[in-house]
Length: 436
Ligand code: BGC
Ligand code: CA
Image (cartoon, rainbow, N blue to C red):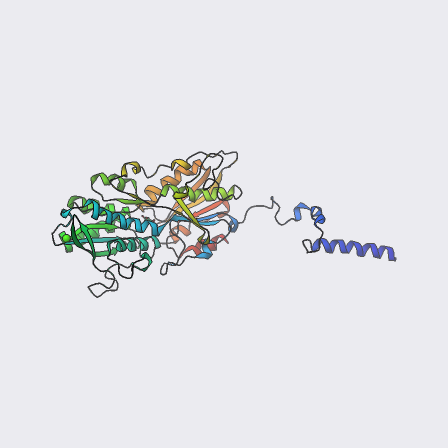
């Protein structure tokens, strides 16, 4: 080998070596276009998207520790297109408490005290002691009624049911007071209980309907008022007992049947703006798949004119969470809220399929018998999916075992995005593991 050939070979080797270190600090920028497209790590035609990189929206049950309420940030930040959609639990819980208090101070008269003992006795139906939304509502009711021990801010109030760690009187609740038609009354929580059925499903409406019979048996006309963590349980109590006994009963969710019952004496409910939440649940998937302007159709109008009002929701970046805001529904305004399944006007415009092509989404409802999710949320999702050109596969769980859902979190390659309603708030990792 002569020197010339050796020099040429060395030069060629250097070119190869430089190309192999492409991206090194001193590689001139002008070299970049020479790199063959097939070698580029982020070539657009690099094959199917890995499941771990597909958009993932948690909704209704926020990944969090069931005991401490601490958010599961690993699940919430799983990838760049992972979010939670729910509602502002504290604002809603405070609102529910105020709604009940408003009713007592502005609408009630002496007849509310059924046995005339000067005490407004109430019972409280609790949804799920390990669900942060339920915890907030129990606290909100006790805070407003002055029956919560532990402090003056909602987070300080003990959310446990009476009887779980007491000695008979209560270490958990105390008497509050309220002025009705110029007279001061004591407010007393007579009983409270998590409404869980024998199989373990929580927020269980039939259990609430049975429990009110038991409570009526032990407390009789000491019960002047019923507060429930949701409408499903509240309506079961109303239908089984409160309506015929003329006892004001308050729920949460603004399901159509509860709103309609306001005309028949149901006290009131809170809208958690399921119409905004269901939209956001699917819209975030749509935006992620359309190329990533995540605010489109949310804070920024899209090409079809869809946009939310700032007062409809808030986004908390540090929690990767969108929270819809709540609204009290009472005898004063219920007529506008009779259909809980109608898509929300400002975001009900059809997207053009040529610019927002059809995509496939996997979505579950954790409990096939949950009133709110099946009577309000799911019909809303079904109204929005077509508007957003999403072909959604709906899966329903049994409300008590995570596997009733996670066992059907399969064939993930066939979907472009996932919306997950976990059964227990600590179980997000089960789904994450399947995406990896
Ligand atoms: C609703 C309840 C429902 C629960 C299910 C809550 O936000 O208010 O009615 O049972 O979600 O997770
Ligand atoms: Ca009384």
